[in-house]
Image (cartoon, rainbow, N blue to C red):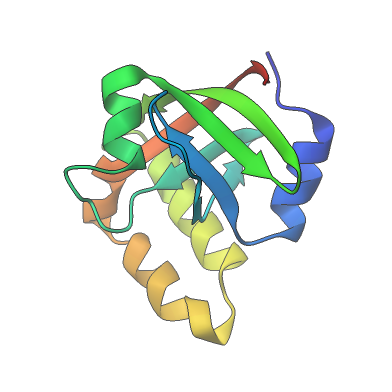
Length: 126
C-alpha cells in the first residue's frame, strides 16, 4: 500500500514529522524523515536502547503524525550494507541543509548511522 499523496507533500514541505513506535506509547516524538525513490526513511539520532526505533524493532508497527493526520505504519530496519544508505545520506544533507541543522545532518549521515535506519511502510489510516 502506498502512502497518501498529501503525506509526500507534507514531508517535502516540513522538516519534522511525528513518530510513535509500538502500541503502548501515548505521545509522538518529532523526528527527521526523508524520502528516497518514493520510500520513507528515518534514523535514530540518539541510538538509545529505549526509543521509537527500538519499539519498531520489537513490535514492527507504529504511527506517523503529520499536521492533523495520523497514519499507521510498519517499520523495517534497513540493512546497514544496503546501497540505499548512500542515497539516504545525500537526502538528509540535501533536506536538512539549513544553518542550524547542517551539523546534525552531517552527523546522521555518518556510516555508523546506517545501522539505525528504519524504512516505513504505509499500513492505513487510524
